[in-house]
Length: 478
Image (tube, rainbow, N blue to C red; front, side, top):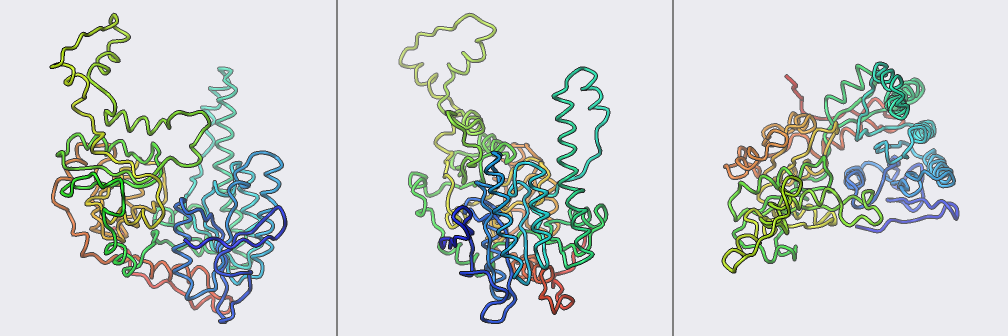
């Protein structure tokens, strides 16, 4: 990845830009200028999308990416929060000269506290000459649970009562509050919204009464780029696979390690697969989950435990009997030692932690896998970058039946094989079965070109606001 160009706007607040040495209202080519405000860390999914989006739009706009400084914006110390506000103010001053501005909105990238997120969002909304907001997460508004609050207060559980109230305030401010600001801004200038599924589209239109709402799934790779990745991807690229037999069938999971990803479902499924199936875990612990003095991340420990790594039968028997029986002592002869010291379900030789890789290695890893599995739990996500990339690469893709993946399947029909959330036995059966769809012969109806058309419609040139319309296939939601 090309390094970011840093231009010091002040000794304390550097501005990271991409695509132009200095922000400008229009490039030398006379094209309209577009500012994209986003995180730009290589290991972040939104950053990867922003990089792809910049490439998609570079023929139509002079694109400059303003990086959101996560060290400042996610800080809670008073001094750093003030510096973060200054960071946003500097961005607001710079984007005023652009023809159009796009904000890649994941609420947490603007701050930890709801009041900070709301204030900084409002500043960007006010400063942009015209704005499109890409919602990567939709926070649903909920009514105040007065009954639960009253029960907690009556039992003198004041901490619980305060949490109920603060959660309501947070969700209301970041849903209804932001929608109210958008609605007000739409009265005076062009403000468009981009969401990743039809469910969020209806939420924006019918619940929040907003106009100029566009929907499109995440799109990263064009057909030519996908072919190049597939043609150059090889197991030899990954030293950790040197010891894996050539005839092994590779099952891959992708993304930061976290409980909601459901990787443990795939580990349990491995117990029901033939021994020549190997699991590759592409991803590491999220940087925000690295804590001082923690010997191992709890979810990593869960995965190792599910795989019976470094576990023998004696330890399992002892653990199960510790609380109900006297201490167990065994004298092992040579014939029994091997039986009891090597657990028959130990998967340490068939599970490979590939680590947090660069974008190129991440995509190449998908291409070398025989099956890509997305075993996520339902957490209300709007979209998932890895599954979109897997489909664009032509990978055989199995996904849990979450609302997110079901919504994606309505755009990319006959491409995803579904299994019920957490059902590792069904997953194992689907992995060994013949593919339900031929992954290599598909052409996605929703792709980088239709994604580009959506952004052109959401970010028109000031003189041609009515001329842009997304050219996309008709979408039926029967």
